[in-house]
Length: 207
Image (cartoon, rainbow, N blue to C red):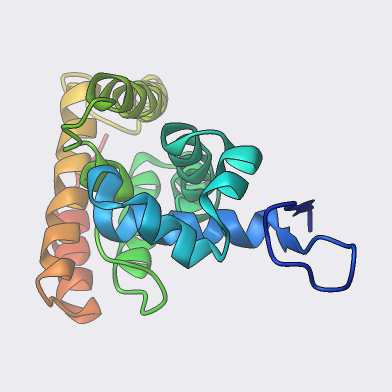
């Protein structure tokens, strides 16, 4: 793991500054942003969770906005890996099922905060609001384009009806995922969410 020396931190041994793990600190920052959103995560919250001082945070990650972008990268790489695997499934129905089953597993995890980090932080209203919202919107657009493209390929393969709107189907799937996230945050069980997935798959359009 990469580490960084912090000159402002208390020394662990005489004449040698303490080091901290960049990777662990970023994971801790991700947890704060995910639980509280961008606006709700104060610098005091972040430094306390990361176990570093404010000058050390600036030296290692830049400002709060830059730290958020790095945390969002980590979130997408680790917590949303199932969405990339979903696009590789051989059928459109398989794509949808992999998306939904992955979302259910993530939303019912006891290790992580509930809800979608992007949705939570999209409500930012501070000085950085425009930049943060634009960044999240750009990421969403990229993910949406990939899903629409996969459904278009399914149409060409005869796996989805030709008259179906791939963009509308993608919006429908995202609406389901966000709805399940709300239900999970409100106390719905994994069995409850699995029932939604099963019902959706039973109604899935055939080619």
